[in-house]
Image (tube, rainbow, N blue to C red):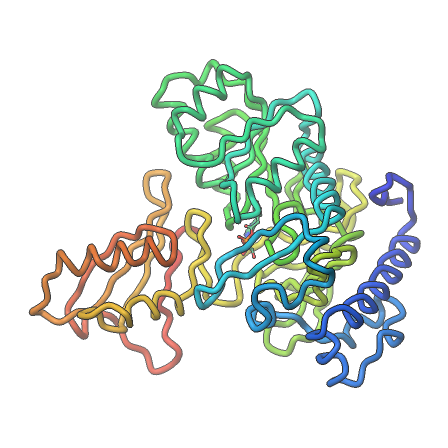
Length: 424
Ligand code: DLL
């Protein structure tokens, strides 16, 4: 049996029928309200009536981040702007943001999904939850906040930044749950040690996501803080945090399939893969009103975990997100694409186009080092500062910049790998 969002009990067949009905409605809605989709479907000779259930899903075209970029900022919204109550955005491949619009109902569904994640982590209305994801255009802060409020918990909207203050409040307010990135939680754990307040902490559980993390990091967090650490997955285009989360068994993340229809496809052929096989996660938003997306290619690598979960949750599981099919790298919550770095370097005199990025996890912190080739006659100190400042202003993160001589970085005849993520 399975529960839908109105808490009604449903059988697997009933859920499949609900998904099918929602998919047909979604297709009808985007066909009539989003010119971009209408043209795409017409080009493939598809009419809304052709999609009768989820068995017809693979007739539909995929949607990509490029589609959102081509229609920037609001071209793929399916409602009039007057019905949009909130906008979020995430950085895109060319520096142009991907813009997401939510109706009032979208915010309600989102809050409900995050509340489900909080319940899975064993937290409830009697808990005090510190939200330490960034607030603002990033979906982490407000998404977690609304979910925790929906849950009926007491919310402390800390955001990121002042870690000592966060720890002081954690002690003073008797905080029992925290929502933030796993790497930030490790930093918080160190600060707790430094401040010598470990015995005053009442923390029971954390809900961490927005970046990949490993079992080793979970063990470290759990051991250092004496808590249960849970994984939460999501992406702005689809909603934000709360698409899926793990239970106490940590054997994959339960996906809220009444709102998000998952598929795993081969990243090259785009053909659907069998349960258990790893490929690219593709999601269709079954109920979104503001920005409904059909078969959105997340570029995240996962799989459908076969079988039932020992926790008894009826929601199917996707495997822990193990990486991406594109070369985006996420550091301290900032999405970085090689094309952004190339664009920045091409605008700076003295910097060559040859570069390499190393991302490491050192002393509990993520550190990004950018190696750039340059000519010998240049003032290296000034150039390093210029690249660092440009990076911070245009991409949103301060890297360690190291200048090297021309020819020092490795060359490749194939598409060269310039970004090395050594954290996992
Ligand atoms: O990171 C939404 C979010 C906020 C999720 C807070 C969880 C908690 P974006 O900035 O659009 O949205 O980045 C989405 O981050 O495609 C993944 O590559 C990565 N990601 C998100 N959650 C996880 C996770 C938010 N639990 C991109 N494990 C996604 C691994 C994750 N990667």
